[in-house]
Structures are given as C-alpha cells and as structure tokens.
Length: 325
Image: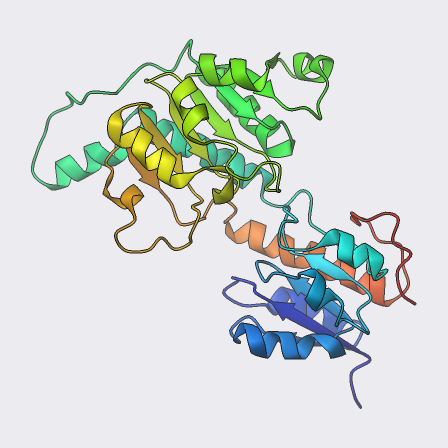
C-alpha cells in the first residue's frame, strides 16, 4: 500500500533522521531523506511533497512556487532566514519552527566562548602542550564587575543573562522590540545600540539575520567599541562584517572574539580569521547536544503530523496563512 503522505527532509545535519521517521511513521507518511542529495536533486523532490522539513536548505520564493501539494513547511530550528515566509504566506503554506530548540545549549555555548576568551583557555592549552608552563599571558582579566552587552533580548539572550550575573557580570541589552520595563524586570539595564557598543566590555550578538541586520557589526561599530572589548557571536555569521572584524582584531581595535558562526561555513583556507590568535572558533556547534537533536526532530515532526492530519499548529509563524486542505 502506498504511503498516505510524502514528506521531504532537506538540508539537515543530523547524524540520522530516525526520530523524524518514527514520528511520521505513526500516520503512514513516507519520509524522503534528501539530506545527502545535491541541491538540484533535492529541488526535484519538492513538487510532490505534502510537507517539507528543512534545517539549512534554502526555500526561496521560486522554489516555494513549485510546492503544489505542500501543506506545511517546518524549519527545524529557530531562525527563519532560510525560508521566504512571505512567499509561503502568499502560497497559503503555513511555516512552523521550533521556538525552544537549543535555548540552553546556545546560552551555555556563548558563556563558554566568553570564558574561554577572557581566560585565554585555548592559548594556555596550546602552550602547555608545546612544553611551556607559564601563566603570564596578557589579556587575562577579572570578569566580576565587567559589563556584558546583549544585542537582541530573546529567549537565548535572556538565558545567557541569567548565567552571566552569578559570575559577577552586569548585563545591559539593546533590543527595539523589547520594552525598557521588561528589561529592568529581568535585571537587565536598557541601553541604546550606540551606548551599548561604547560601554560594554563583552558584546554578545543575539539578533536574527535579515536585510536590516546584515553586517550589523561593521568597521564603524567596531571602532566604537572599547579596545579591550570582546565580541561573541553565536547567532548568525552575516550579522558581522567578517573582513572588518579580522582587521579590528589584527590591529587591536578590539581585544578578542569568540565565534561559533562565520560568513562562510566552513571557512575557506587562507581566511584571515583563521590566522588570529585572539579568536576562539567553534564549528557552528552552539545548538548541539544529543538532547537538542532529539528535541528538534520530535517537535518539528509533530508539527508536520498536525498539519497533515488537520490539527491546529502550535508554532506557526505566518498566522495569516489559511493553509491548504
């Protein structure tokens, strides 16, 4: 007997998709795992899909126009920059996401980068392995009493602020979508973007990537930061002008950076950011834990089940979309 529904899983970086398959098997859906196919091969599967789950595979307006049967697009994550939500809304296709996914992991990872940079953990480790035994490294400073500036104050930034205050950091935040009284209620000082750049000892990025926020941190913004400041980015590489950042780090315009995301992933050989010893780099791993990968598959697949069985969606982002029957 043929499957009742055809679901395409595109661009996911999971070691396996067993959770998605198990959940969708409960309604007799066939999961087409396109995660290791070429973009062209993946696109050819789309017109026959009743649902699409995507991690990093881009769904632009042209591709969405080909989704003749699709009843839901599920972004297996938090950010929606890979899905043209407006095009999906015009096509009456609901778009869902996983809002609570990896909140704790990303806050932990941002804090880990902050601590690694401030305490120069990577440099100490390399020196010890090379035979040196000397604690006297420049750029190691006390965190207590320093200011952590959060650009964006969503769930992940809030979780980071809750982790940062017990180690003695004071927290300030700039987010045009969050009222000052909400920040104060969270024991966070409201600040303008310009003031935050000028005063923060650590600047951590937590904004979504959009046309308005692309290269939010460029040469001018870096020049306004303290020359002792640290930049942390666990959000999106496109928020930062990476060439300007590499230049600022090389010149000492800012002190250091901890980066989990880059403009090109993985970075190309010869990328200037790789040659700098005042940068700690991780491979877009902030979201990762064994538990978070189980969660994102479970929650995303359950949304697809709801869409395909006529149930209300829990995490739809284009609320004006009527959906397809």
